[in-house]
Length: 503
Image 1 (cartoon, rainbow, N blue to C red):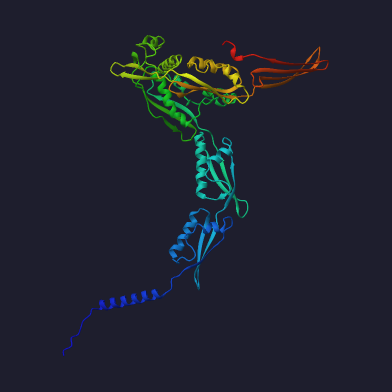
Image 2 (cartoon, rainbow, N blue to C red; image 1 turned 90 degrees about the vertical axis):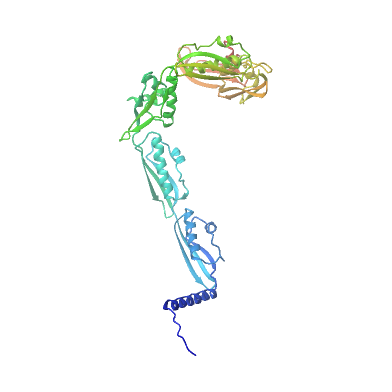
C-alpha cells in the first residue's frame, strides 16, 4: 500500500482553529444564565417624587439587563428637562443586576424679577416670557425669554434695549432670575420719503397716514394729551406702515389715478439705532375720468329716480370716495322702502387707451322686509317701555332705514346708555326681528359746594340728581342748603323726554 502525504495550507489550519474557538465561546455563552434587572432605585431627588421619575423610565424590574438599554434611560431622564446631571450605577448581585440612577435636579426658580424697565410694565413682560416662576431652571428658556423681551422693546421702538439675565441663589435649592434691562432711547421716524409722488404734496399724504415724521416738541404735545395725529408723530408702528400703503393709494385714487401702484415700504434704521427713514415707492400713472354711469338689476325704482341724487358726473375726475358715497345713497334709498338687505356692487371698467372709467352699479334688491317683533337687551335698570317709546317703528311695520337712524339718535339723546345698537336680523324671507342692544351707564350725580352770602353767612350746598329715576326715564333731584342763619331743602321730579326735543 502506498501512502500519499496530504498538503494543507497554513491558512486553512488557522481558519479551523478560529472556528473551533468561536464554537467554544458560543457554547459557553449558551450555558451562561441570562442577566435580569432585579431592582431600580433613584437617588438625589428633592422636589420631584421618585414614583414620578420612575414612571418616565421604560426599563422595568425583571427586564433583561442590556447595557445599551440602561444607558438609554439616562437620555430619557435628561429629556424631561428637570435634571442637570444623571448617572447610572449597576451592581451585580446573586439574583441579577441592581440598577441605581443618581440624579441632580436643576435649580428651582421661585422668583422672576425685572429691573430697569420704565416703559413696559412687569405684567406685560411676564406675558411675553416663556420661563415662569416655580419651575426648574432651563437655560435655553432663559435665553429665549431675554431675546423675547428685547424684541418687545424693539416693537415699541427701543432698538438699543439690552437685556441681561442673572441667576441669584436665595438658598441651596431656591433661585431668583433677574432680567436686568437697559431700555435706551426710543428710535423715531426722522424722514418719510414718497418716491415718484407728483400728484399730491407730502403734507397731504402725511395728514392721512399713521407714520409721520418726528417733531422736536413731541414730548410737549404728549403731556398736553393732544389728538393722536399730533402726539403720535415720530412713532413707528410696524403694523401701520403697511396699512399706510392703502391710505396713500386712497389719496391718489381720489385724484383720478386709477392705475396707481404703491410698493412695499422700506424701513431703514441708522447705525446709532435712533432714527428711521421710511420710503414708499409710488407709480402714479395717468388720471382717469368718468365716461359713463349706469344701473343694473333695479325694479323697485326707475332709472331716473336712481339718477336723481347721483353726485358723480360724466367727464369728471374718477374718485373712489364718491363711489362709496353713492353706494350708501342707493342703499339708504332702498332702505326707505323696506328693502333693508339690498346690496349695491359697483363694477368699474377702465379704458386704458382713453383713460376713462365706465361705472355700473349692480343692485340686488332682495325682499321688502317687515318687522316681526322688537327685542330689547341689556337694560337692567331702564324699563322696556322707556326704550320702545324712542323707537320710530312698530312691529309689523315695513322697516325704514331713516326711521332706524332717528331711533338710534333718540336713544342716544336720552344719555342713559354708553352704547346703543339697532340690528335687524332676518327670520323669514320677508320678516326681520329688530334687536335693540344697550349698555347702561350711571345716570346719578352728586355735588357738594359752599359759599358765603350777606344773608346766610357761611352756606353749605348739597345736590343729588338722578337722570333715570326708577328706570322710568324721569329726572329726580334733591337739593339741600345749610346756612348759619337758615336751612333750605327741596325735592323735585321732572317728567320729560330729552330725546323728544326736535323730534
